[in-house]
Image 1 (cartoon, helix red, strand yellow):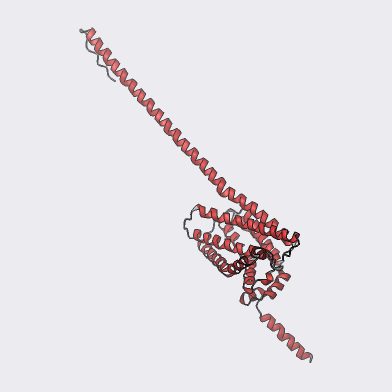
Image 2 (cartoon, one colour):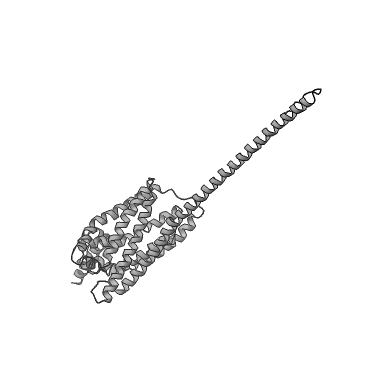
Amino acid sequence: MDLQRVKMKGSVNASRAAEPPSLLKGLLNFDRHEQHEWFLENWTIAFYFVVAYVVFIYIGQEFMKNRKPMDLKKPIILWNTLLAIFSIAACIQILPEFYQILQGENGFHKSVCASCQEVSDQGLYWGWLFTLSKIVELGDTVFLILRKRKLIFLHWYHHITVLLYCWYVYPAQISTARWFICVNFSIHAMMYTYYLIRSLSIRIPKKIAMTITSLQLSQMVIGVVVNVYAYVMKLGGVDCDVSFYHLNFGLIMYASYFFLFAHFFHTAYLQKEGADRLRLKRSNNNTTNSSKTSNEISTNNNNSTTMIVNLKQCSDVNANFFSETHPTKRTVKVVY
């Protein structure tokens, strides 16, 4: 009997060992309850990724300090292509369901406050992929460092906080996540497509870059509005499937994003355009002043020439006068 139990236990362990890891299994055969349980137990793994990310930033920048930027054009094209396709595919899969909720009775309220338990398996699957993708997107920073591009605070702060937020709230399956996921996928679909076109060395009007940054800024406004709406509903005693703790976290995060993106937009576009206009104005003024100076010099030269001609005529007159007055003398020839 004991031998039989040992054999059964061994066969169970063997079958478990043969199973792929939980996340990989989710890709092949998504189970909403199983993945929910996995994230409840393992969401703190995100902190390990954050620590590794920060260490890489420091070591990577030190490593590249005295080296030439790496030529990573082909890997970047592949990277942007994959992320653009992923984001576009996500939009195709989840936006119809989101739109259907908005079109229903009390659509906006339900889109913010209705339980995510009502979301289809397909919607939850892409929400799960969205959460995992925040680790993959850390690769954006790798390319920046290896190419020795400027790494601004907004970039790494955004990657760290959004990773921690997504991994923390996924097990709670908060209702406001509908908006966050749908809007973020939509922005990323445009953003990575833009990056792909640029990586192919195709020139894009500056207004398109400004438009994408404006849309990113509007994403932060939407995040703040959604959190505030849910906050007001809960304070008023209306049922909304998100905790105050998650709302506080989300509100602080989105508000900080808004101010950082607004500052970036002002510095990168408005302030730069103002500086360019001032530089152009100074250049035009210098050109005008230079032209004016040249005209003055030309006028002075003309005046000098006129004076010389007058002097010559005067000398000729004097010479003729001298010749006529003194006929016995030789005529004086004035040489100029």
